[in-house]
Image 1 (tube, rainbow, N blue to C red):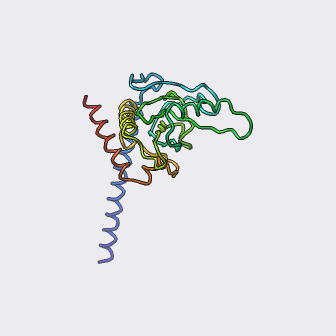
Image 2: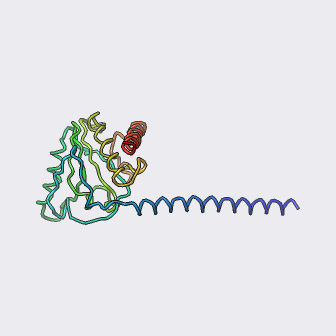
Image 3: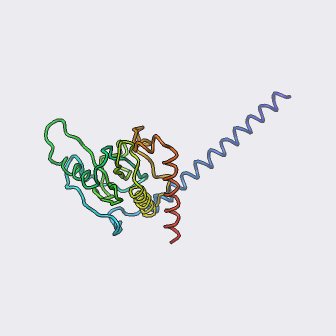
Length: 218
């Protein structure tokens, strides 16, 4: 009798767990459906006047011109070249167009944020950039300049990162959970300071969440 009761309880427990799994899966499908239904047309997004568009020349190594229709995550990087400016890093990407031979490098980013908080857009949002492999086709990349080897962003760079990610989230129907590090894509130590100091990354994400909420309420 006791064994039969245990079996009944086990069956009941399995049924409850299955029901919970179905509810969670159903909820995720509803969220995905809502997001897909409300995706913006990337080519029609209008850039705000507080950042500058300086698109790279079309070339196979940094701006291949590959079109895409959806963005699911925003990926934050550090340039890994201390003291360099946004314009210097943009020039590096642009100059990759002139490569020849078998040792060619492919690299680029949709945005670069400088030490003083200036923001350059290098590639349109409806095109692929070479920064987040193997997720180049559904992510936005943001490279951030930094003054020293620690990789920590200046206050100005961090403030612009928060502003840019908040705007992107509002325009792309995303939220702060969709802002991730290069580390979260492929395990690379990038952005270095914010991988090695998890508390600093959490503090940035908290500021992003506040900025997104304030943007939606305004």
